[in-house]
Length: 217
Image (tube, rainbow, N blue to C red; front, top):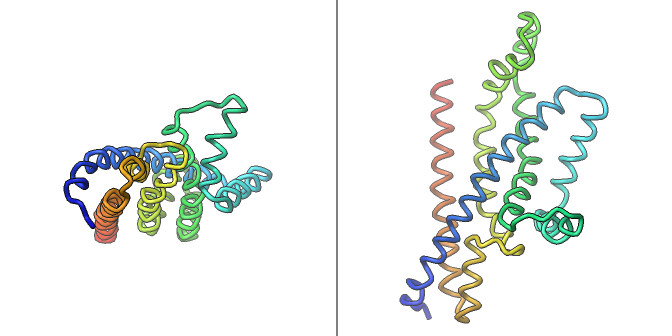
């Protein structure tokens, strides 16, 4: 049976957990977007040795579960002298994990830039940095927006995994409330509703941004 009084009682704690989840998502996404772009650009330069190393990085990160990566960072790295706060650890893990996926999105977007644009860059003898910033990346961004936006939303949902390393995010708060009062129905249901609501609103934002980019194309 649903207990509205109990649901009302645990809701503020869940909102605090939601705040942590949003923090993980925003900072983790910023790390993933920046690191993924760097990896994609460096791979596109096809520097011997470095290109293969970055290929291994992408495949290794994508080929191992994020939960295993979180456990490794939280339980193994401290034995090597790397001691971080659980929240910081979780943010870094999510950022690195999703950077590998976003790097592939960036790579596909970069490769979609018409050959003529690359030839124009070489013909104008533009500095490498300026060419990427002014010509290549702006043209590559539009087709990447839906995929990148979906990965940000996916990170928001996957952040529930961080409850396994004691990060006090939304799922962790729900489980804590359930184990404290031996009632899981209300906190887990409310957590699911909050995840769904934020994910849905975010997806609408991504769709609106995509349409705006198409109109301004």
